[in-house]
Amino acid sequence: MTTERVPSEALPPTDVLDLFAVPEDPRPLQGGQGHSFVAGDLVLSPGRDAATGAWLNPVLARLAVELDTTKPRALRIAMPIPSRDGRWVVDGWGASRYEPDTHPCLDLGVLVATGRLLHARLASAQPSSPHGIRDRTDRWARAERAAFAATGGRGIPLTYAGPLVAELVRRLDDTELGPDQLVHADLAGNVLLDARGTPVVIDVAPYWRPALWAEAVCVLDAVLWHGADAGVMAQWTDGTRRQAMLRAALFRLVSDGPASVEGSAAAYARVLAPLLADGRRDCASPGSVPE
Image (tube, rainbow, N blue to C red):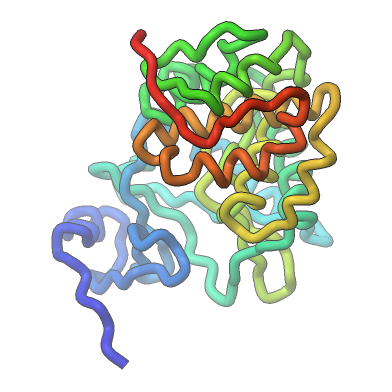
């Protein structure tokens, strides 16, 4: 069997490998998005933000140790590992402990239970808002702020909007979703099961928002992209849970942007149909409006 050659520019640089004290023979991580590499006993991933890693990774490292020493183990976190000079991110590369003999968790019930347990532990591990968590400027952070700024017909404060976005915004109200806390807003696709069936959380995407919103994002992603039964959306059509799902959908749609949404708006509309049943107009074709 032939192996596709990885472009040299995609590989972790030699100095990164040296600082993380791993051999210079990185290999692509199977089952990921094709950007991470296994080197020695570490997984090296690009695109990491140094400012975020500086506060997030110490929290995750302490919690990973606590979870690994708790019996029985109901949850694990892939341990973040610093470089030899004490940095959590080197030239955009971060490292975590490699977890062999794991496979992706696709069971939505397990994902939701994992998220609830994780968020309970994160609420204790990080009781106050980390400095700078809302200063990020990446597209996901901008979309998250937009999703929580829009209320009751008032538009998304970004250059992107469209018929489906407008339908979601129209249904928003001022319902409180619960207290803000540190959450992982990209759980679906980032939970593995180890050889004993224990969930292992990887690639924490940190936000300071209600846990119910992060759960809604997980459910939406699992239905849209990971084969979960769309019937679960019927559980998100009323009250606080409906408002959480509306903001989860806005978060994903706005972070995707107009170009990506054009190809997936119909899928979003089908999945979100139970939330749009009250006088829903045709919202399969997104558009854009000026600022």
